[in-house]
Length: 507
Image (cartoon, rainbow, N blue to C red; front, side, top):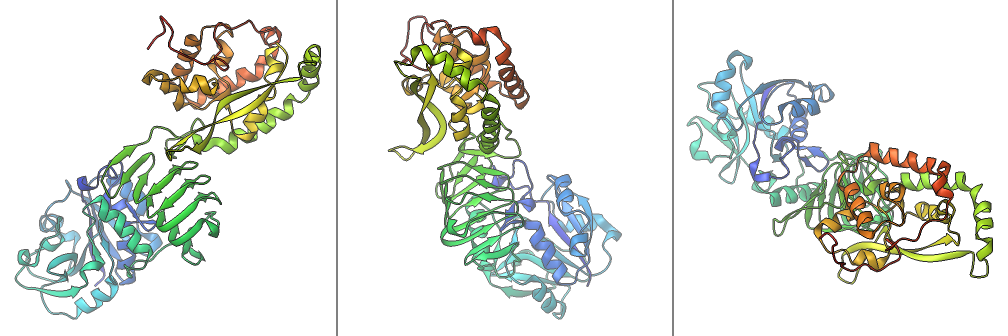
């Protein structure tokens, strides 16, 4: 027997929001899409010709598994409306299926040895032979002759009473068939897979340490796994001081930042987990967190906490190393200006060469309530009224990661804590930066409200192209005459003054 029909046409509404942008068959289980586990089982059993039945996201399914060459298979495809009666699908295919065939669903997990089961079923008499998991179909069978009746391959899975009269059933352990009918099921099947409770699956990666399996190109310190079992997919970056506990599955192309903690959770591909973020008993996909215990779905808007790496750009929290590197470059280029700044501060040397101020930066810390909040930092400024010289030491804050090269104006802690209205808090979606539209285009003596509105508008309209323009404008600011003139006295300082509600202020 060398041909099979593989059903991957499940609609998957019960697994929303995970199936908003992909097919159930492509949801990863232990680092591989569900359909790949099915293909590996068929290839191991010696099946070579497979007709794949697809419906939602058919193009994506075909792109991911291709023509089957990497498994030594020959794949062809047929399209349905989704969750059609399998018998009707086979009847419609006609001569495309000639002779006996193996039927299998590719949008659930068969945790038993499918190849061994097929070998046993080939010697079992009957027009059809099906896998029986405690009275329900395991969506795996062989069809030999007679009128087509593939009811046991239907979704949802049907019981034995709905099958053809000439069928034989071979029992398997019910716990080794995972139908994945809920988000909690999906979470559990991933953890079961990496703990070998589903022995029929082939897990990717290599054993890097006791309990730690790594995919190609991933960098993880064994010290990050505090206890338990963890599978990390390909091309992942896990900070050395991140903590992985319990049973953890991290899919391909994931970044876990410093001091993040992941416990008994599943992290899906292209996800960024930010600094100090704690994830327990959850499924995380991009910026969406699903709590398995309560079923709550949380969309996180702060890209410094969770982000979708397929959509995130340099403007998000994942670009910290790049901005630091550019900060080092900018600091090196600014060195000729430091002697000039010292000369400009010379008349004020009796009061000290520098002023020291406290600002609210981009680094995160955990407060008394366990929430990750932006951390305050102290920065020096040359004691001179010349703007371009006064701000030179802020480049060191870019190097340290407290500021970005481009962003909103950094506020004093008092001013930042005074932001209350929703429209004001929109500025928190952008990082605090050395330059930006407010720093470059709004006069220093403009009212606080005008600067705040400029920051809010920037936060809502951020684009990587615009950030590059602001960065270039900041570099060219050294040529502006106004950058070398003493700054006028601002009516309300955006960085130094504590902000309170004022008459006539928007909000």
